[in-house]
Image 1 (cartoon, rainbow, N blue to C red):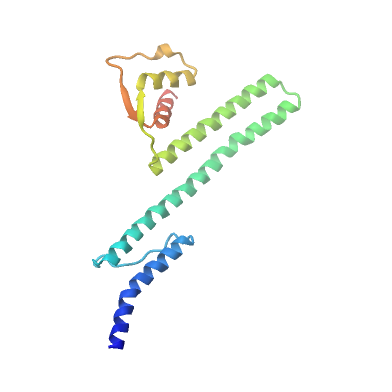
Image 2 (cartoon, rainbow, N blue to C red):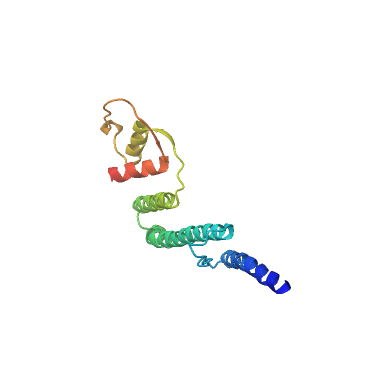
Length: 179
């Protein structure tokens, strides 16, 4: 009886111990840790194990995408930041301050554009959308103003439209169209 109950206890506890080990490894940063429970298993422990594996896959994918995004951000921002540094050095050396400030403004605008694009990409990839009602004509008018274009370029036909969107992504899309 003791031997049979010991085997039964080990058989019951082994899958739970595997779950504990996988969760512990995952918590320590091993995002490749999986339970390896076969798909044919139908008991409650197997269902929990599959749920943990699915969660681990999503988190591993998000961490990978976040690292790629950070690498892209650092790479894309270095060039305009280096140019800004050179322009400020030139301005200090006596080059025309007005011309240097105009050049610096252009570089800052480029950095702002890159950051906006990267944030929009991040929102799309991670599904972090904050939707709300936006009047389409207001969004287009604002984008025209930011682009230095006259608001008179906007011609509305039909009824005024409100759209349910993420305002940041809508502004980014309109700016891309204007560019």
